[in-house]
Image (tube, rainbow, N blue to C red; front, side, top):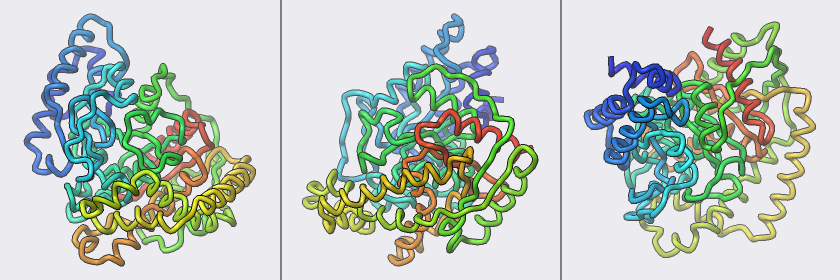
Length: 442
């Protein structure tokens, strides 16, 4: 029976604890034992915080018996990407540059999760400093894809996705700067929520690009995403209600250029399945999308270099060259070029709001490609660059436009279905996603 717990949603585990059919202590022991025995443990987890997890589970057990549970997910074990500070536990953000870094306090979001009674299983692998959408990390470990062990799992929240997909955590908490939650979620058949920049506290989170860094969960369904979202914000959870009808815009144009057959087929099939009397899909293009994406090369690399440039100038040999080169590209742009790019981006953001105002949400394929082969990425630089750009192309649209976004799995393995909502409309986005999810799974 306990092995079934590993495949349950976080909310179902919480309900089991609530009705007494699941013991928090037995639950965490089941997870810790599964991690210990799993052949990919070291490719998924950087650190398993067994003592902390057992202590937190013991406390949750007492609360469950006393009917003083702190939240629906009190006693449920989750994992954390290795850029969230955790007290007395190494937090190294997937890079040798931060080897041996041990924070003295938890990140604010980890504090919020602990306050709600969640159990911290440990830290998961990631792309170096979160600056790749592939999840390839030759300097530490590379987490494989659940559907193809020879392929990468997507990045940068690679281990976060692996921890859930391989049944070694109920939820993985990741970060998303250009697609780092949604790409690994899509490639590993999970739900991944990208929140709006500024919506959730980044205090105690290792930075990449401060104006784009966001926090979000990778989980099994929309309900789990909704509940953990409220917890990360330290807010009371209100059950989501699906809208009666939806007007969706299918964003075409560059989003489907160069797309592989399976991701496009999966997206077409999903659109056909959800389209009906209560969900209407209209196809359209946003003419200046190419211009928007062309500016991402300036803005992202400039910000990333401002954060890490001085360290990399001295210790760049500690980083995988493909990722190092992305950081160093930020040297090529001036402060004025960066400011001018932001002026254009802000104008495009305003145009987007006007362009989409009659729609409830915008939909598109999460990634135009399937998970690339690990060995080929390592041995073919041009293949690596192309795969990284394509993997993040569609997801980066949401970041550049300042939107919230969520990816849902489709009937085709490693193919995601993205829904984008207006800035700071996460609760509405989650309600829309719940309705679409119910149509896709019915």
